[in-house]
Amino acid sequence: MQPLTFINMGRDQGTLNEIRTALVSTSRAKVLGECRSHDDLMAEVIRLRPSAAILVLEIEDSDNNHSLIKKIGGVSPSTAIIAAARDASPSLILGSMRAGAREFLELPIDSAELNTVLDRIAELRTEESTANHGRVVAVFSGKGGAGISFFATNLASAMNAPTVLVDLNLQAGDSASFLGIEPKYSLADFVRNRTRLDDTLITSLVTPHSTHLSLVAAPAEAHEAEEIHADHITEILHLLRQKYSCVVLDLPHTFDPISIASFDVADDILVVLTLDIPGIRAAKRALTVFDHLGYRGDKVRVVVNRWSKSIDVQLHKIEGHLGEQLIGFVPNDYRKVMDSINLGQPLVESEPSCKIALEIKRIAGLVSSNNHTAHPQPRKGLLRSVFGRNNPTQALELSTLGDNA
Image (tube, rainbow, N blue to C red; front, side, top):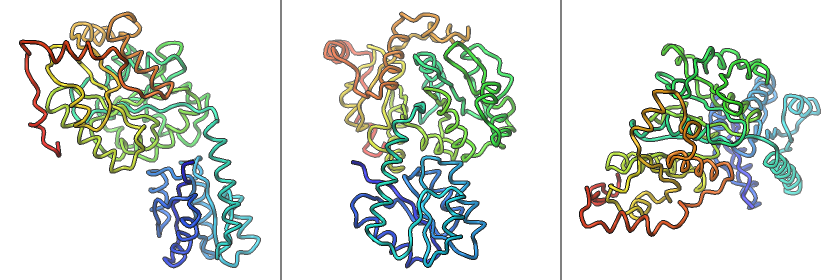
């Protein structure tokens, strides 16, 4: 069983050390971080999405404590808030529970009481994991020109369930044109109305494309992007996943705060690369960042776009260089792709039997079933046709990439 993850906040380092010691001694808990301020705790909860946050209450600061508990519950409902204090009065305990705390720990911590609290948090996590909530899939490339928006729109169209595509290219999003629709509202409208978002309002703000696919469009005006912040994205994605079976994110090529917030929320990150040296280098850099962010191994997967048999590259060496399996190979067909984009018709809908559409639908099936196995066999014949040609078009030497590419 995976240990429960914790972030702890308190003004006194000795108290934080006491809590850390009690948690790690159980082997059931992992402390991800410690904070000394409310702002730092909020930021860490949004970034790390821990199982629980322990907040050491200060009697003279009860109003701010209660406000913080409510805010954490709003941005990360899956994080259980545990209030803690020494010599706590009944009114302090009751006030924290009314604000939204799930549990209360009396300091110094009693091991039996702590185990009871951990049992309850574990039970809560199990209930939430079996609850009906949508899967969030982030589509990303470390460089431009990899065909992210085309892949994201077609992937969203291929999902056999109620799906919403969120265009997070805030300055110049094109997902609406790829789907051939003209949005009346955008992500900026979600942000302006976030305090009153419910199913009815969400339905009115998204732009429908088909019976199972809708779009949250990028802002129509570049200046509107300034209104959108990382915590807004975290909150909105949480609400969208309650309504839709799948939420697909069309992301920019940068690791800005909004992208990081999106990656944190995502269940799956699909890194899209093209088999050229800049594309492989960008993918390697992105995977390194994801590793530093502490994402679990099965969260990040790699898809090759614009794959062609004319590219003379040993795919198993690419996998070894990246340290990841390649779970998909979307064929290159410039004319079909450009026709699809210009007409605003996803290929998975307009030509569902073409090779590009079939491969994207296969990848969609892997993601929706959480089955991230590599490209199915027979792959040997496919690789022989790539490796065994007498007159390769152009060989790609991985040695030119370097270990730190």
